[in-house]
Each structure stands twice: as structure tokens, then as C-alpha cells.
Amino acid sequence: MQELLWLLLPVAAASGWWGAMRSVRKPLPAPPDKQNPAYFHGLNHLLNEEPDKAIDIFVEMLEVDSETVETHLALGNLFRQRGEVERAIRIHQNLIARPTLSNEQHAQALLELGQDYLRAGLYDRAEKLFQELKEKRLHTAQVLQHLTTIYQQEKEWQACLQTAEALEKHSQQDLSLEKSHYYCELAMQAKAAEQYTKARHDLKAALATNPACVRANHLMARLAWDKGDIPTAMQLLRDILDHNVHYLPEIIREMIAGHQKLGTLQDLRALLGQITGQHPKSGAELYVAELIQLEEGNQPAAHYLTRYIRNTPSLLGLRQLVELECLNHGQHHLLCDVLNHLNKILQKHSNYQCQKCGFQASTLHWQCPSCHRWSTIQQQPPLENL
Image 1 (cartoon, rainbow, N blue to C red):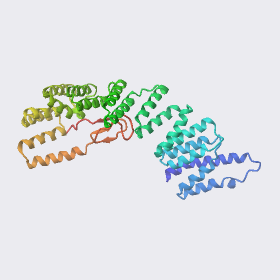
Image 2 (cartoon, rainbow, N blue to C red):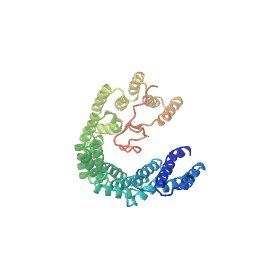
Image 3 (tube, one colour):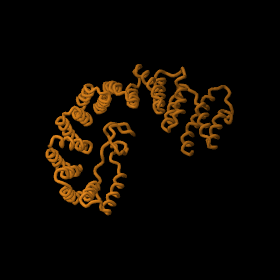
Image 4 (cartoon, rainbow, N blue to C red):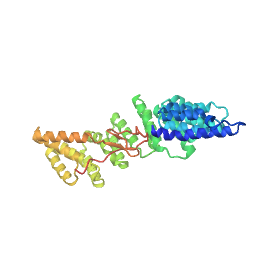
């Protein structure tokens, strides 16, 4: 209540001032206590903790003319930022209905109303206003960005591509990252419809747009796997690690399965050995332990993990070691209790986090659900420092 009071008092004061200035122009000004009775009614509502009624009065007192348009726009923007979208819409609709606005003022009001609709989830109405401004070539950069937001929400990826290309031309922005994801989304839609040729075409377009697109390489590898071309799939997965070694946890299961089919687990073990040497905190050692378990058995894998944990304390490594010891010694009650406690601790740890807004998730999202940026969510480093 106090916050709203401080926000609205300047509006009330401005309203009283405008009313006083307008009354000065009259031949016979009214006494001060009768100039703006609505002004005092508004203050009374504020003091009686009736902010809704106070806001209505102050908005009505601000007559729309060339001198008060900016005040209306600022007030509407304030309401939208506070989440009071209905009030923002009402103010901006009232502005647009005024025939005295200049072309620039009318365009600004349209832009603000479109943002109100966007905030309220009324995408059709927002898109209509933004398209109108786009055709008039007014506020083009903002309009194209808002249209992109709408098309992403509606999963209209082809429209996203077209809008991104228009925005690149207008503002000289580099949107290759975003465009590569739009192509990947189109490829996924094509794959779901069993249009594999189109899916490959879209993925090649994604890589042509952004050669470092890890997602496109991964999807290409899955298409090759589905086709039975396992060597190509494995090569594509290895190429991913050249661009982003931290993506290893996302592809390691597919790599193990593929190399098992090809009988080349030693090649994968050698690759993981290179990664551990170049990126000692990537957690690749844990996957080396898995390969040792597959090829040599539980006990050698346990010995390897023991040496690893001594040098690099890790809860993930400890859990893996306890799992192996349970296999070696049967369902030992103490070991089982330790394993259960470790699992509970690790379940509380968010595996992924957005590097821009801090959003945390248990699975990978290519687009952050919070800030809506692309490729900003990364897997957090393995839990260290016991």
C-alpha cells in the first residue's frame, strides 16, 4: 500500500498541477479548494487504502492532449511492469481512440498496447498491432523482436526464421544462433512426421547457419543411427566434443551403445582418456570407470574410482564407487544406507542452470523457460569438494 501511495502521489500532484494550469487560462478561476475536487477525492481514496478508486480518478483527471500523452504512456507502462495489465490496456486503448494524437504518438500507443496484449498472452491481438506497425515501418526493431517472441510461443518456426532474417537486415544483428535453433525445431517437426529428407535438409541449413551448433550435430547423429549408419553417428558425436566437451554427459550413453555395437570400446576409452587429460574437471573419468567395468569387471573399476576420488573428491564418483562395492559385496546394509543417502543429496542438486538468468532445471532445455534465450542452459560441473 505504501509503495503504491508513493508511486501515485506524483501522478496526483501532476494532475492537480495540470488542472491548476488549465484553470489559470479561464477568465474567472475558481477558488483553490474547488478547482479540482476529484483530486482531493483521489487522495482521500489513497489514504483510505482504496487504490483502485484512486487510480481511476487520477486517470480520468489526466485529459488527453499533446501535453499529457507522455504521462499516459508512462502510467500505462508502470501498470504493465507491475503486472496490472488490464489497467495498462485501458489507458493505451483510451489513448488510441483520441483523434488529436500525432502519427508518432499514435504509433507509440499502438506499440505499448501491443506489449500489453503480449504480456497478457493475447498473442493474436498483439500480432495484429505489431503487423500494422511493421507495414508502416514504425518502431521496426522492437516490432520484429516482439513478433519473434510471439512466433516462438506459438512454435511457428518458419515465421521465426523470416522475422529473424528481417531483423538482421534492419539492425545488423547476428542471429545465427537463434536461426540454427529454428532450423533444428523444423527438423524435429519433420522427423516426427517421418519426413526424413526434409529433416536432414533443415539440419544442414542449421549447420550452414551456425557450424558450431551442437544440437544440429546431435540430431544428425540420431538420424544416422535410425538409418543404421552407426559409424557416421559415432563420428558426428565425436565432432560435438570438438565444439563443446561439456556436452559429453548428453551423448555418452549413445556413444557407449554405438561403440559396443561396433566393438570399438577401446577407441572410446582412448578418447575419454584424452578428454580427462585436457579437461580434468569434466567428469569424463566417471565414464572411463564405466568402460573398465564393462571390459574388465567390477573390481578393477572400483580400484580406478578409488584412485580418482583420492585426487578429485566427488559425490558423483563416491556414489558410483559405493554402487560398485554393493555389487562386489552383495546387499550390505551399511553400503545400501550410504548409497540411499548419497542419492538423496544428489537429487537436491540441480544439474542444469541458465548462464543468463540463473534458472535451474533437472534436464537440458535448449531455450531457457525463464528468459527465453537460446543455448544458455548448461550442465553444472560435477559436485566436488566433499
